[in-house]
Structures are given as structure tokens and as C-alpha cells.
Image 1 (cartoon, helix red, strand yellow):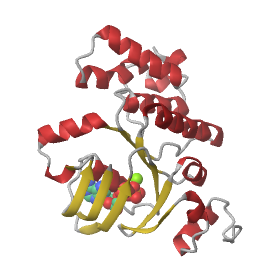
Image 2: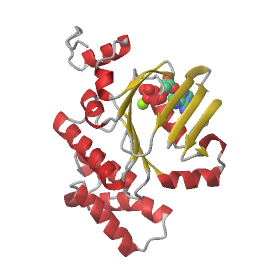
Image 3: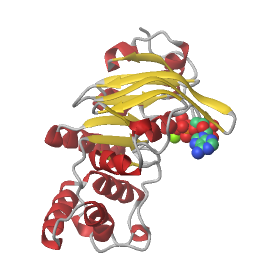
Length: 250
Ligand SMILES: Nc1ncnc2c1ncn2[C@@H]1O[C@H](COP(=O)(O)OP(=O)(O)O)[C@@H](O)[C@H]1O
Ligand SMILES: [Mg+2]
């Protein structure tokens, strides 16, 4: 479904991706973790065609993303939904209009059909009470969920999530996890999620990839990952417990 083959990308004279290989099978959830500034968001940008590789290929559903023109990218993006790191709602529109926007822009659905789709997803994400609120009037957790509603309202085949639980309390984080899982069950979505949240990674990941210095340095199922002896993986796991000591042993 998604395949990155030996992808290289230099940004501002700095090599960021350095021969990145990655594969996500249909219906699978891949979790990407790794130190800050290591190219996780840049990797997502390549999948949705916001960036093109300098070398190597990015394939989505057999389509070479880097080779697409403007029209080709538009078609590609009808298949892909993305939840950006900041949530990315438009501040001057209420929640209803924010969520309806992609349907109004990308489809020829009538307002009645749009209303049904929007209300469905808002109900599913427990946001019905916030329909007529502005983004500034609702909590951070609700903004995240509204961003999620907007990203999935077109029912994309592929969802990309950039740190969907960062800044949320653990209760809300687990709620987002189960929503991601439910969306996967309901729509059979293929998902890629960047996160620093070990609980999310283990809860919803079919596979976990650790990125460092522009490459995948560890890859496996959550169980394999927890047993990895790679120093960066140990460091990541230990950091979640804030001890600085090894509390988990393979
Ligand atoms: N559009 C850009 N132009 C120049 N440098 C960029 C751009 N986007 C990201 N970078 C740099 O690439 C590196 C990786 O960024 P990013 O993928 O956002 O890291 P993270 O792994 O934390 O998501 C960072 O050093 C960042 O400053
Ligand atoms: Mg990032």
C-alpha cells in the first residue's frame, strides 16, 4: 500500500532522510517513533506528496508520488487524510464548517449529504455539543478530535497522523487511540502514525519503526519492539518512565 524505497532528502543543506526504506501493508497501522528532528514529519510529507525525494521512490497504491504533477497529487490526496501536528483547524470557522470544508472542496456532494456525513463523524467523535463552537472556544482535546474528524470525513483509504496525542492528558490520549482503532475497523484504513507515546504505539501499532538519522534503525511488532536491545529503543522506552534507569528487561 505504502512503500518508501531508499529515499534521500536534503533540506537546507542538511541530509535529513538518508536511504529510508519503509513499507506499510493494506489495513496495517505503522507507528513511527524517533528523536526530535530526525525526519518523522518529513517522512509523512513525502507520503502525501508535500515533498519529493531527491533520490529513491515513494509508492502509494502503486503510484509513484514523487513523479506526480499537480493533478496527480490532487487525485492522490483524495485517498489520503492527514492529521497535522497542530490539528490545523481554521480559526474563523466553527467546528461544523471546519469539518464540512474538505467535503465542500473535494466532492460534489449536496449540502444535505454533507450534513449527514459531518454529523455522523461528529457524533462518532463525541463532538456533537461543539458543532457551533469556534476552535478557540473548545478544549485542546476537542480541537484534536475536530482535526481528526476533518481529516477522516472524506473516508480516505490512508490516514497519516502526526503526534495526535501530544499535549493531551493520558485519558484523552487513550480515547484518541481507540478512535484511531475504531476508524481502522470501520473503514479498513491503512495508517501511519508518528508518536512519542509508547502506550499508543503498543496499543494500536501493528508494526513500529524507530527512525534515527534518516533511516529505520529498528522495526517490528510491538512485542518485538519492547524486547529490542537497540540502545535508542531502550532509551525511548526508559524515558517513558522518567527514571533514566532500565526498568524494562528483554
Ligand atoms: N521545509 C523545510 N525546510 C528546511 N528544513 C526542514 C523543512 N522541514 C523540516 N526541516 C528540517 O528537517 C529536520 C527534520 O524535521 P522533522 O521531520 O519535522 O522532524 P521530526 O522527526 O521531529 O518530525 C529538522 O531539522 C527540520 O528543521
Ligand atoms: Mg515532527
